[in-house]
Image (tube, rainbow, N blue to C red; front, side, top):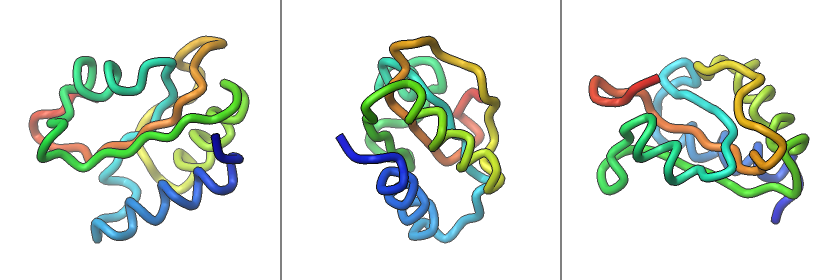
Amino acid sequence: MSPPATVLQEIKSHIQKRGRGYTAWYAGVASDARSRLFTDHRVDETHGEWIFRTLNSDAEARIVEEALLSLGCKGASGGGDASSNKVYAYLITATTVE
């Protein structure tokens, strides 16, 4: 598991490589990022643009989430629970559910 600064940089790089601004992306925390992304948010696992990383704790995941939200990603802090040690981001499309 990577420290928050490393994870933040990885996610920022992923978003920047896609050529869209942060406001086109949604960020959040979850204990099961795959379920959150592909079931709850309906991100296309094969063709969608998404990323998630695992941190040591929910507190670390929330640090990264807050940083992404402050950069302009959609979403809201305070979700998840004490087991939410994963931070995720995905490109918002007409078929995703925020």
